[in-house]
Figure 1 (cartoon, rainbow, N blue to C red):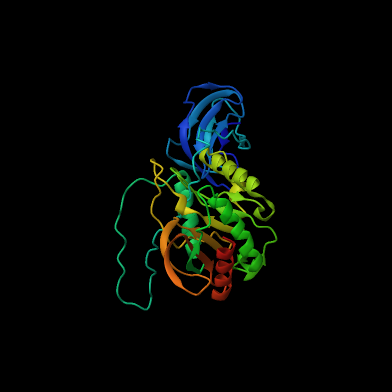
Figure 2 (cartoon, rainbow, N blue to C red):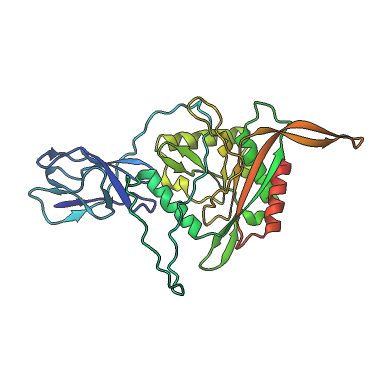
Length: 348
């Protein structure tokens, strides 16, 4: 072959960023020698040479984006045949398995104003902002969340759950998973996929929960499968495995797809000193084609009016968990959302 093109990296990925070239023009390479390291939206990938030969030219520099089917290298003294059919191995980095779950909510960037043909007032072009281009997961996050805002009619309902009976050893995320199952059994329409083109709503028989995981590289949403049929131990093992794969950048793209509903437990987010950061309520972003997401804020002590059996009322400090339910109002009514959130709180 003369040209080796960027191969299909699988799972619908269409582009990759060049991270580091391992060869230069004039180098001799053997079959399977690494040519270049690229970064997709979710992983680092080493691209090996499909043949032995001499590199005549490398296309692109570190930081450039290259699309599937575009040439990566040109071989010297080769035929005009082109190819691009192999992928490399995903690299891994170390992570601390004892680290707490980190969850955060993403925010969509503001949209530019629409051009109003009935308004004679000219709309100025936005100023050049400059800065560094988004790369890797942050680039994917910007595209995904921007599309989310454009393709859902999101409304958020907020309420508190009294969890005074929870002890310090309670696994918060596992309890939220159980509450999700209980609420969906009461309101199955919130565990559904909506096709806005066909205007069809398809309730899903299995609960596949997307969990918003924060990393230094950006936001990921791995999917914990079939949470309704998993006990505490299985849920915790699954959560740990997903989190480890995300931080190692080794998670397959298929494990970031197919969620039927989502959870953002941003209240557990800590800084480097393991101190909880702020966050009570939010407007978490729905992940289409799903129609709902729950956001859980930081647990705190709140003053509550409590009535005893004799009807006497007292003010007590109670452990409280703030919750935010965002739902697509095109297919979920306010009453259905309120019933769902009520069942969620009752389960907690």
